[in-house]
Image (cartoon, rainbow, N blue to C red; front, side, top):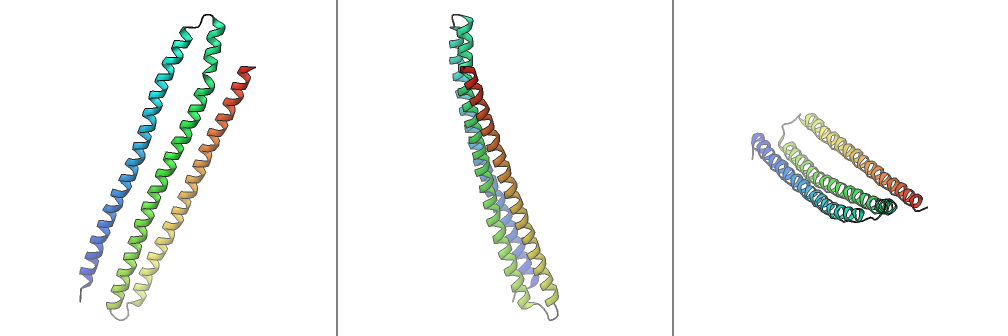
Length: 187
């Protein structure tokens, strides 16, 4: 028969290991998201530099002011479209990273809750008579914490969805405004 101290010590050790595993998993997912973000920004910067050089060469080769202004206005729409594509890609990176972080945290917390409940059940089997009320209260507290975490997770997901919808809406509005400007410039 193991003592309560040994049971709690084993549970504390398992909890510490689970926390380290969760931190490692979250750090890994965060770095993956950062790698995607850095890659996107490097590609965008390289592309922008190349396009700016080409545009500058075209502008400097203009023979008169009319050609200069025509060339400069012709670059507005492609630049806007690339900005919109960048915004969408950026939003996708943030959304997927957030979803992976949430998934990892939920899985780890569910496992920790399962282990805590199993430990409480084991302790309850060996508990002295009259301790049923305290064990019941402890189980209830664990249940309330789990419910609170689930509500927090639900709210965080809703906030992320609203943020993603707002970013998508802003990108769409920017795209529509750019299309109107391009149509007006052609007239």
